[in-house]
Length: 326
Image (cartoon, rainbow, N blue to C red):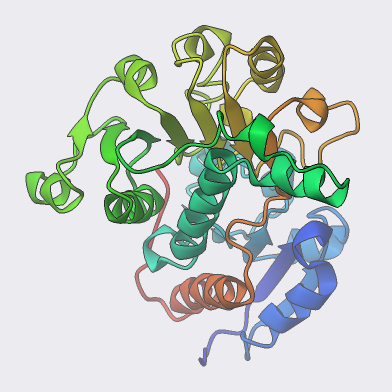
């Protein structure tokens, strides 16, 4: 990769996704640009003031940050999500905010992690492992709650790039697929996904044995799954979230798990991150938790970095941008 433009790039890489080490690797992919690596957007006020591009890996970019960078031309997110950027403030300045959505960099591993959580719940892997470590042969106790994915209904909330990858795997597991979202997929896509059906969200929740979330976090989707919607789920159903923690009302989910009105949950994302010790889900029954690892394999991190950097290079070279958020 090469670029002829010598402009200032502020690479904001949060510590929990690699910090300065990861940022230095990104900087090495931008020859010709002046790159400053920080772990928080306001860490170096002078670099922020002079930035033409902010390349952010989960580092919040607020309205104040955007106002502090008078020459800002682009905010590039090294992720599918963009909820940590004030898109309204960027839009008011006519500064595009881009993701790596169409690159496919994360979708394969997020889909794999989704199924890892679903399988762990269906097969009761965590309680089975814990019991054996404690010399407890738990088969008689667990066998009534161990289930199959085959023949079950999977409800996918958000059939975008990642949602489609999940659906493809669900077809291989002989699952029935429902999906909810603002737009219906093409008929050929639905056919390819085993006859997937587009239904209203509440109908999806009532009918599904597994519900997996793949929607972006916006003002309209914050706490999309709240106490009212959790009550629509079957008591035998499982909820999986590998998208954004704030899509779910975490206290309401903890209530549903504790009361037994929901069979279990697989959670990879939290609000906030990292979660505090006070998060009730950490102590809830029949949960499988992972620390936002969907999308951060060795292979995925390389693809994410290359996709984000390529968009920056294209911008610096005057080429069209990809994945510009509305």
